[in-house]
Image (tube, helix red, strand yellow):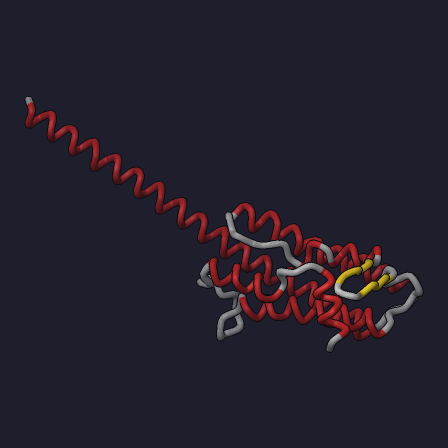
Length: 191
């Protein structure tokens, strides 16, 4: 009886280990597939936001046309914000606050910086119907940030690097866009 009990116990343990191992493997594969999809979607959204920001800088639209362009850019930036927020949360990535969090609002609504001896009030970009030098520099700086992220998620053959370790991705975000808008503004005016 004890030999039979021992055999049944070993059998149950082996079956349990096989089931748990398969579940764990499936979870890891599913997580990796979701992470790859996230990087691919991020690459696509960065492409559209960069392209649109560069189009605004190149065309420098005026009046109502400027308002339309800025609203479309706001939409593209909000897509990036939501992608980072919900995608990062779903994948359990450690993504700190980033400049996409504030950028759309400051472009549309303007901003006020009061720190370190600075007291800057910046009206909405479309308030006077045209883009001034500082506004163009801010757009250029934001575009540069997005290009650095896009470059960081690509491999040497210019394809999305789906093998990019998650901790390296988090460091990329930390290095290039993990700051609040005043830093973006100061980066722009100090170019």
